[in-house]
Length: 169
Image 1: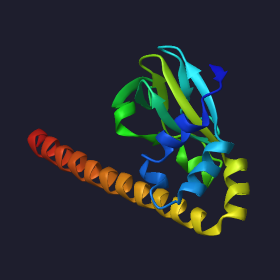
Image 2: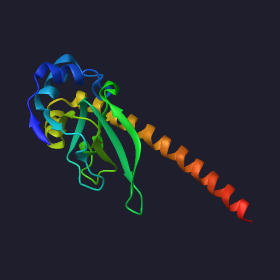
Image 3: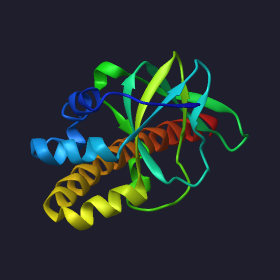
Image 4: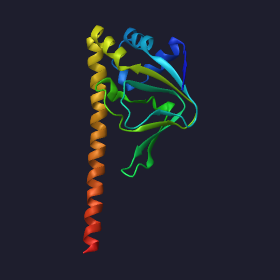
């Protein structure tokens, strides 16, 4: 990882496309852009490691990343691939709760990310309550969608397990 400087307008252009910030005014987006840093990762570098304690959120500015999950046997498998056109963010739970990361994010190409630290986010929200509300609401919606997806996956796995047990009888 290498810290880099991106022009403020590049940050603003990217942030304004990310649904996490869709209800913010132009001046609020500029405020977020000013507190975000930028990092560059080589192909194959780990951006987030599952299990590490999170203290920031990332916005994918350029490149492609792979989302990896770890099995109980400590093997990794890919669950998704994200590219810059997705206007994606990851690690956003760290803005709410400094807890263990739930997945590994690995650069699949050269990658540039914008980084929002949880401390800078908290300071921003203290000065911009309304913006904080909209951002936290967007995070909550995103987490709800993930939870619904996880529930569907559990139901599918349970159904497959039931079928397997019936076949064994």
